[in-house]
Length: 91
Image (cartoon, rainbow, N blue to C red; front, side, top):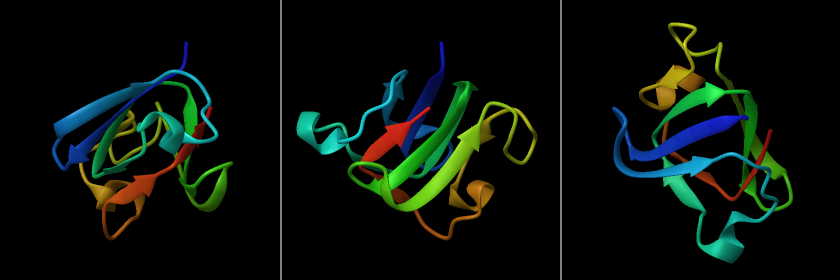
């Protein structure tokens, strides 16, 4: 089963949310958040800053990241300059 953990702060700290399914509108359940680190435990994920898979996208996988282990300790690890507000997510 695909699985990703996203954290509100760098270094895998702060509030954490786990996702295992596609969700076209995280705002409906209050699951949208600004994240600054992530761990992809399995699968490949696309995270969007708009609902319905629109807007800017970040693609993360369990075999990517600076060490190839799916761990992204801060935005620079996925090529970002700042935390990312995710509103929809797909596997």
